Amino acid sequence: MELMGLVQPRPVTFAEAEEIIDDDGHGGSEGNPDGMARVYVSPELDGWTLVIGPWCDPCDVERSDDVLHLCRDLSARYGQAQAYYYGAQGDGSAWLVAQDGVVLRRYCETGEAENAYLTLGEPLPLERARRKQLGLPAVWDEATESDEDEDEWKWAAFDLAPEIAAALGVSPLKLTAETRVEGNGVIAFTLNATEVQAESLRLDAEADLSA
Image (cartoon, rainbow, N blue to C red; front, side):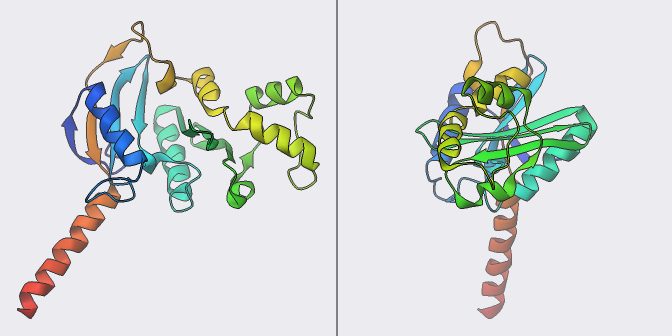
């Protein structure tokens, strides 16, 4: 949490965290209109810690660079770090995989024009395997791929993030009663929230001076 700049942690249950993050992921709330002000930091789950919230989105236009740097730095310290986006209503997938301080792969398939500019690294084994199943080249050039192949891969990749997360670590969609849990989960505030609070305090101080 210190490395990520998270502050003011408050213990919560899984059920409370799910409600909070669901609200933040669907337009935020008062004082958190973009959903970026807080995240859920899970207990240790089969050796992994999950940080969940819109702030962690590896393909968000405003957050993509910061999330990449965070994953790189976290992997340098802990060995592995990953970030995912998954829109369960057909909004696409994104994944970012870092190991030992190096970003191995970033790929986004959310239907946005900017997706191609975010691609980094070589396709993961699961990507290659899925493309082979579809009869597509395991390694491809997005600039020269045919429209038909591009569309076929797009619809397959839209649902791929949960599979990659489960294959490489722990997916929050695959937790069961058998998942080993150690510690407690918390809701914590992000730098976005502290920056807003600081700006609010500065404006309040200026108002007092003007008065």
